[in-house]
View (cartoon, rainbow, N blue to C red):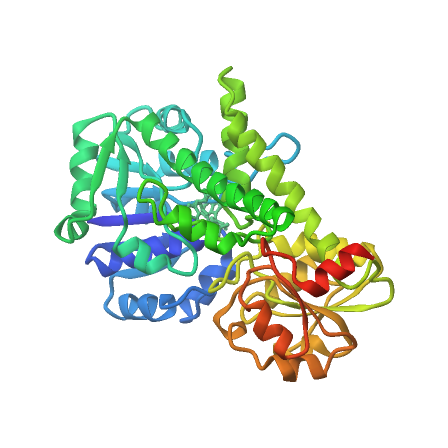
Length: 445
Ligand code: NAD
């Protein structure tokens, strides 16, 4: 199959490279000239494990190429995927579809022969109908079908997720589009990955319902973590105790600083807005989003409390900035609220992240970026573990503590046991853990 991928970001580049690896001919298109130049010179604009090698192999074998001009490739394509961004629209939180519609207009003008146009971007119900109208308006004689194929990959495990997905969802309104997409995903049929064909609108909604459910699950355990602190119970044991029930499952039950990233915050908001505009509100998700926003803002307060009530003029060290490990993505990361909250309370911030510092520098210029985990501790009143990168899981805690002004470890991912942190001389604050004697004493002061 000849495939064109419009938008060469996290989703477009991973999907394009994986489709090429399945044996299809793939052209990835992006408006961003610097991104395409970098890809053409053998570089990869994002950090995603295994991606650089996958791209290099498929470029070398002649199945994957890059361009800023979609005209020729779209004219020759069997399938055109739209994988451009759908951020939250400023002001009202609806999904901003301007990039999708702009891509649809350009595709419409370039179509030649029967082509299936597929939205891979996360788009609200009815977007496929509008894409169809736009293409028809631009090119009334075009032969095409519009399908929906939402992407479920997780950053940090994107290639594995794409090649061995839990399921593939495809929304179609006609048989010819179904046949083409069956052909595109044939290699995964052989792996027995379930492919669910639905109506187009249903497929669009499945993506939002999935992300909203996962966001709700995280928020649920975060609230249970708060309750654990109040009643002296341990949230990790609660997670295990409920997660071993197959109806619940163990995934997405890790308490932490609140969800972030490029998908959950904007997708929950967009679902809320869609539901409201159809007069069928999703109140659970409205509440989920509100609780999560409050939680991310409250994390700075947790740090301030851990150092005795004030960070004015004091240094706080942050371990990790990206919204999760194994990505350089900083979009809506909890670290952003934590840094801003601490700085507005008078703190100086030192931070280290294995892959996210370049993106973080643009968003958080006030931070002093250092080049290793231990250097965040220099003169710090507390070190806060924000993102659970593997390299932060076995730190030499004594070495960390020796560099600090006061030995406080705020462990927002429960990476360390309080016992081991205390043995290294730390006052350890986790999430959803029973208060330790030293904390009880502090609370009683
Ligand atoms: P991104 O911002 O990383 O990439 C989008 C790319 O599209 C950019 O490089 C941009 O320059 C390009 N672009 C915009 N308009 C264009 C046009 N008209 N022609 C060519 N290129 C254009 O976005 P992303 O994170 O890859 O997300 C893309 C979509 O996939 C979103 O709808 C997102 O919600 C969804 N999604 C993302 C993830 C994820 O983990 N990032 C997972 C599943 C679904």
